[in-house]
Image 1 (cartoon, one colour):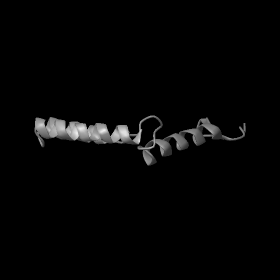
Image 2: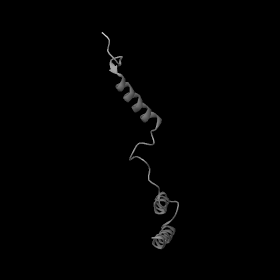
Image 3: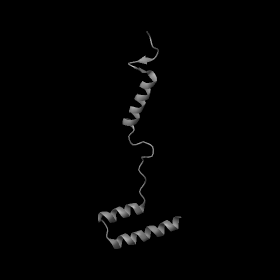
Length: 75
């Protein structure tokens, strides 16, 4: 009995599918659709710095006002 394109219990197309899936999973782990990191805005960076204690409340409010007026100018 000879089965055309039947290798080790699977047809050739299944081997191809498994190989492509393994390459996709292990060779490109950061290019998975809908999993990309979004860009940080200036306000996000400012909020992170305030939350970590790098800047105080007064400096946070001053810089937040500057960012808000800058966004209004460019909008």
